[in-house]
Image 1 (cartoon, one colour):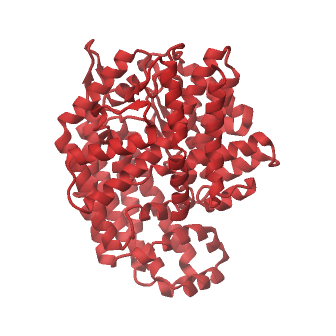
Image 2 (tube, rainbow, N blue to C red):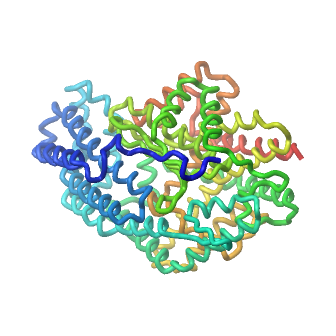
Image 3 (cartoon, rainbow, N blue to C red):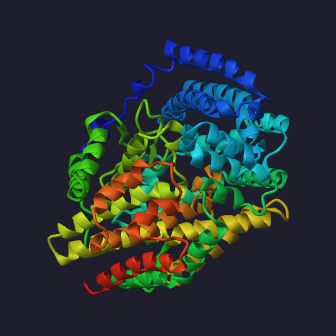
Length: 589
């Protein structure tokens, strides 16, 4: 594999030359002036219905320029999280953004104060306004939960020293974690987590021990951070009148609660499939039970072959290209340009992501690539996000974003294309068995594990209403929800009872995690339609889906494929795809 030093790093100069660039100050000045002019419309929206389209366009221009600054600050910080200069730079831009949003918050607030008759009149006065129908609908869904404008303006400013500060403390704590193995090698969190997929069981166990020990040394801090943010959310939900801790997330995802309930209930009813796989894996490893840190271990009979970065690029782009040349051509942009930060290194955030930025720049991808097959799948996943975001940039900026549920469609579909391509290229049964097992584990992690995470969050937020939680409370809820999902074939050593602390989704985006299960089951059904060939011009319709961004609702996007997630049988169909893979794997014995 390419050395860490030679792996590609992204170049953020498509935003600004540097954090000291005068262009940054120029953009801040431009925003400030436009905001001052825009603010003069405060209190007059009801009398300017004929100007609503123009006002939305101005709001959009300000929002996009501000997002450009924010994206640059975030991406710079993501790879230099321990650099104090970068920390101050991001904080300064966060504070600037908060000031701006406070000043223009009146606009969405007054949109929600309009009557339906006012909105209809505005549409009648300017047909162009219909372009933003979905955006307006998504804004106005919050009307019942909107507070007094003065309070709405104070809350984000207070958040800088409240919830947002706690999130920043959490991120920096994870970034500063350093682990020294028995050979004296220093690892960051991403590298340590990768060790839990190592072929050597001793290294897997050591990684789990190091992680548990490090989290345990900070248990007071993690317990305080989680308790504080749980309480903060409870206070905010109560102020706004949300009926449950997850209610706001469903609104943000533009999804009905009964659909989420149908998803989670169906997944939990199929936990036995997860139990069945781990029992199979334990047998393959010659054990009655596997350790928690063995869940993603390569099978004993094979090793996880090292895949160079150059090989990974070819594998993913070829898989994309076999489906659609246009999909591959868009994906190729990310490799031909410095749009991906590939290697793991100190100070870089863990995991992987795709960041959409703004249409006048382009998306960026972040990986922590170590050459494992699972890393190839991660590349396929994040490139799917990147292609989706790139194609969405044809929409007006306010319509480029997609709810989390639909946002996982292209990423998981990209994974499936890559997996099927790699499976077809297998040279023998053992290689095929290894690849199938890895894909099933990825699906288990995406569907069953994420729903277990969701249940963990539900239990946490519910119990927090009774009072502050102890470190042991977190541990018990974690073990209970993990046991339900994983089954008796996986040992749940007390050593792993604090692993909840490094799952950053609980901190960054509460109740985000079910979106992964939604996306995986949705794509399983979508891919099944593609394989059956029952939809004409599938590729064209798929690319059109991606190019719609957030301009259509999820059910409308899926209609051309004959799919309806509101039908409870839809979710079972997605899970049956996983069942088919498990049966295929079992047949190879």
